[in-house]
Length: 396
Image (tube, rainbow, N blue to C red; front, side, top):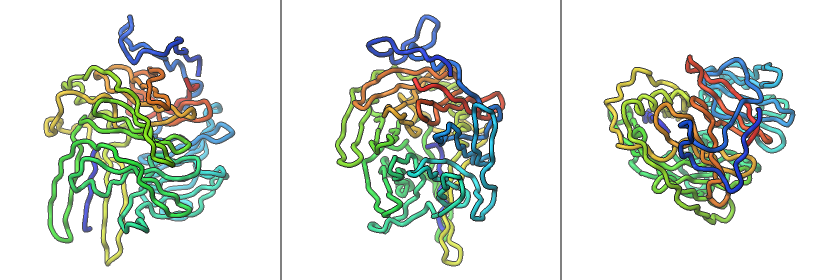
């Protein structure tokens, strides 16, 4: 999850897997891992973004992209290479600040996560701005504060998000929560292990600041949700997958996946530092109480390329996989990004619904998967300036 500051008081052909499955990433004759090569993209949008974390595909093939650091929401025609800007920067009804993610809702609608204005905004099928609500909500049954920042949305429009309320209290796990915005019902679907944390407090009374920071590359679980509401959790203890039934809570566990831990040297530390720009740097949550009015807002950004890497506590080896949100494709397969030595090509293990590795996909150095569409895979590639170029591929 990176660093969290809490201030209180305040295209192309795709090589098919051979019959019998694909190797999980053993080096081939050329030094690259075996498996499905992603190949060349079908389409590339020529203008780069600062940060892309989700892509929302429409039935006509166009896509909606939110860029929180670029402060822009655009609808793209990747085949034509054209774009339409939706809305504008501001605090008004048709505006946003740090548009962070876009998720499909039933009936052709879209949910926009507007980090800077502290709200969730519903867009019509024609992308007209509609109802808004704060993403800081109170659970009507428990009376606890929830930060509804979706990590996934299912076909019924239910939002899945981590319960980060206890992160400042030293807990090593957090809950996976789901909210139905129509009814307000909140469900707890399971727990996931968070990274090991350090915690620092300054000030006192009504001017108390708490900074909680994850220990870099410490083992943590990763999770995601399929379109039908099945929750997948990659367990960092022995690297296996649990599929949790979204309605009955049943758990299907796959076998442990063998891997060779990668020792953390200077190159791996620098790679970790540079990789934070993939998701916009640090992630902060600010809580302010002004004249009795409580305001909570989140933001991205705020890290530096010249960060002193020696100030961190480092594990000896990398965990098996990245602890970022797990994308699940339209076939119900979970894509787990593997940790590798610095400078090596990005590799995903693709798991089926039983928790078995179906194949390994090599997407290339400097590239990561962000979303899926109808038989499509959307990835971003970091260019030489650290900007992100959106690409579309046929789904392996």
